[in-house]
Length: 165
Image (cartoon, rainbow, N blue to C red):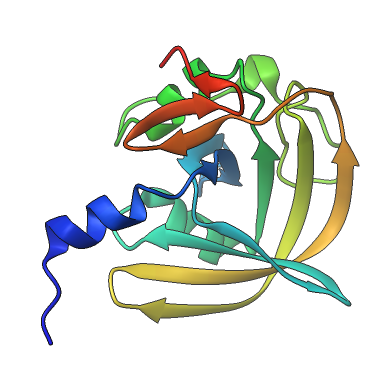
């Protein structure tokens, strides 16, 4: 049975997904971020997550090369950060909002996010159009209070209704 791509997309847009900024280091050491909703908890023991990244995203090769990535759970007010991270190509540096870590193996995360995770890649698999990264969580922190930014019906939303973006 063939499934129509457009119908599948419409069905999946019925879900409300939390919006994340996945941060990574490029080959020249720059820290960048990309907006992602395909992020999921994998296991509590050890603490681990899954992140799915399109094969064409430069984050894919950068994460494979460095072996680490960060996840920042965006707050309801951070739709501009989400929009910046969603731009294909171009400048994706978030230096003003990133934490400074003393260990270069860690990827900085957004200090203004609701919560953050710093992860080490333990496995990756190419499946269809995406690479699925399994990351063991090395550090986790709740940074701020409030509700998360959501993605629903093709735009940003909050728990109380539609977002500003």
